Length: 259
Figure 1 (cartoon, helix red, strand yellow):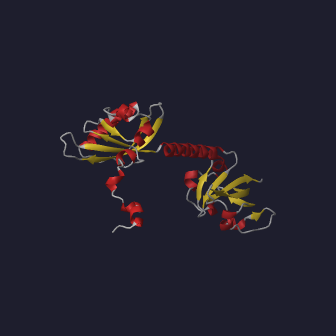
Figure 2 (figure 1 turned 45 degrees about the horizontal axis):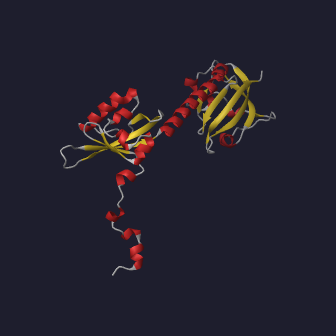
Figure 3 (figure 1 turned 90 degrees about the horizontal axis):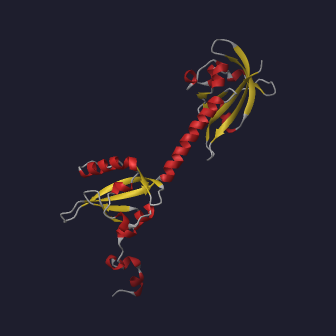
């Protein structure tokens, strides 16, 4: 005999009694497409994503909603999928919404086979990655801008990684030290700066502790032997390079001639 508690347990309800259309209600945008690429049905999430109703999309080729310059490529990839070629997990297409906005979506596809002679059908899933793509582009542009800005700094600057190896020299540092960035990259700074002979900011001999430099700023001076053998006394200021999440990425060392 079924108890009252059992009757109220949602896990005991027969799934057929829920009358839920999983295709329509799933939060993942889906299109059911026939073998000719025509949309048989679009679910609610897909309609919300592109701004069209199911009736407006039904009967049209799926690639008609892709950006004009990508439609022929999308049609070809769909046919290749029907011929047995798997879709790349990172396949991306730019879609046009009803309001003429542009979206970048990652696509995946799955065959839906049935007994009908009109089959097979293809289930196309779209994941909106517009924000991720935009942020990645902005980060890339910012990174390139930062690199160009670093290279253009008037003050000679050297970037060391957390292991104490030279990673970057800007143009001013290349001119001062007569080393190119390519020649110095990956080297230990001792080839340029004798840390053991450094003077602290108050003029006293000091041993520069690189591990301390990772966590705090420092200033001092050293007699540096340039690539050609000339010696110059340089003022050195170091500052940890800290990411927004607090992780130390390396050390920035600014160099300037004293005499």
